[in-house]
Image 1 (cartoon, rainbow, N blue to C red):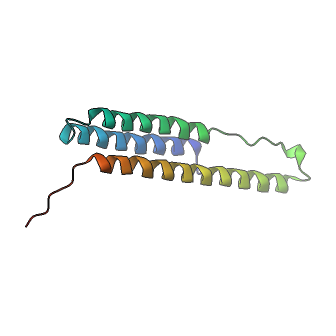
Image 2 (cartoon, rainbow, N blue to C red):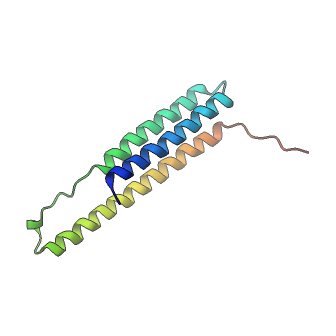
Image 3 (cartoon, rainbow, N blue to C red):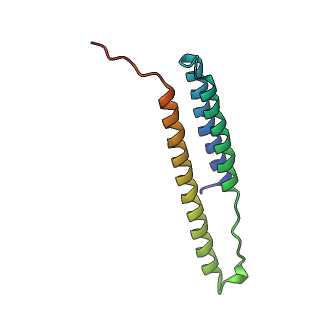
Length: 113
């Protein structure tokens, strides 16, 4: 992670943009599926909350637990890299599910003959 603050800001931005798209689609297409669109927006809010909670982790070891500072730094970097990769995978998988649900609610365009 480059910076926890920027990562949290990016998560909030992405979830907010997708929620805005849901609101637009809800007003445009869905007179009968309003509850389903609301459920997607709630899932986005919960996803945002969970992802931000996953960012706020600390390395649970101290430098004195290692032989030298270099090993501590190496272990700390690998820990945060693994946490970052887990967060990316989590966000990617959850966003794919949400996008698939959004696409299922949008009416299909009729083919022009």
